[in-house]
Image (cartoon, rainbow, N blue to C red):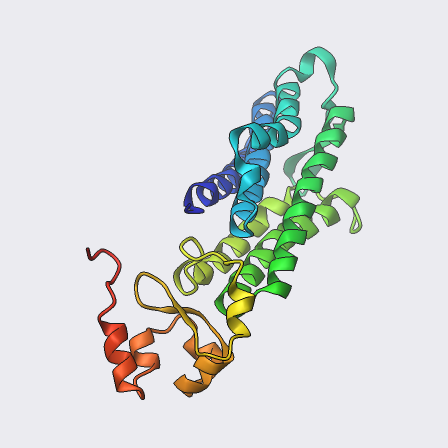
Length: 273
């Protein structure tokens, strides 16, 4: 199944996170800022759960996306959002929001309660799982799949490393959510993965490692006739470096073998019957 829906959810969550952070900075009065804090939390949780769904599908662990299992995974992350909307009654998510003025700009420093830290720890556990699965994909896959996994790993690590720096106050108190700012960078990083390496269309296959070890030339071609994986024997036949041939049209890649290129040209292309 396509990763596109999960990817769309992840990017929507990131966009909401960044958007509500921007709106929170625009308003000066605390009552006007408070709703954007709450909506930003919802955006962050949506982004994290979307990320997990993308990684589970990409790495072949789609069984965890069955409704029963994924609902169980989501509940501990989603339920605390209710505490943000009802915080005025119990103050378990935020004890308070401390107004701060820096350079003429009004900021708010939240003082977090126990429910926030429970949600924070759980969500970072989900991010850790996503990171480990992607790191394994980088190590165990090859060719185009390794490039895809590496780009995704970068897209996962950068925001959360920045968030850890932010939350730990290593460089002092930062009154803006710097994590939201990194989404512009990770969004640009995903562009080549989406268009050049066809991230949402191609996912690793379990037998890729077996194919690479075969003595016969084996080439994996997608529906549009582009090479997504091949073993060393096939690469030698093409006479091209691996970095040049991946994602390249198979007909052109094997042009020095006219009979093979002719057969490849006869394969049905994407959109043909």
